[in-house]
Amino acid sequence: MLVNIYDHIGSVGGDDIKVNTTFNYDTNNELISYTEQYEDSESARRYDVSYNSDDLVLKTYRETANSEPIFEEEDIIPYENGNRMQEGNNNTTYYSYDNSNGIFKNIHAIEVFRALPQMLIGETHVFTSENNVIYDSSYEDIPAGLEYEYTYNEDNYPTKLVYKFNGVIEETIEYFYE
Image (cartoon, rainbow, N blue to C red; front, side, top):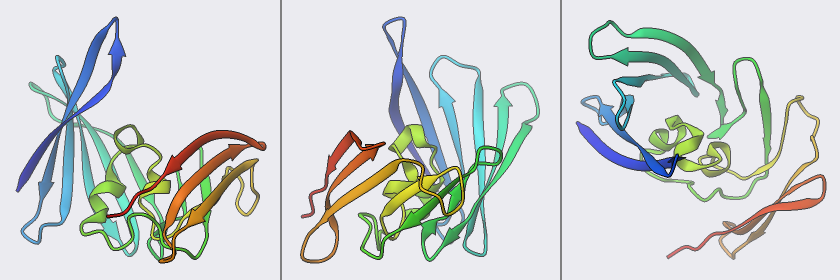
């Protein structure tokens, strides 16, 4: 099964740059790969998706119309109890979570969102975990001046996130449920 979407990426010289993302699923409707084709470009990037226990494994390939795919890298993204625990092959970031419900808890096919690169859905680790990030750091078990402050509704889901860096508010996100 294939699903195509267009997503705005940015602007270069006043022109919008768009990417067409094609998702490929197996017969069990599980995501097995997706390909990003940039508008007006002859090359694409393919991500093969697999699962190793709770971990997400992404293999990245560069593709062009007239050549074999070129392997670029393999990224193993560890998850524990539905929460991303760290990311990055060389520049590792570690995450810690609260015990409250994350905004995408119990969403069908959440692995699709987890596999997308950050440029498509914002801060992936914040949006796709079962619980809510309370800090992230380049050092395991040591906060790095990043604070995530949540306000919750009566069902223990966040209604507001205030993201601070060294005590200064960087971003405020409000969540609405219907």
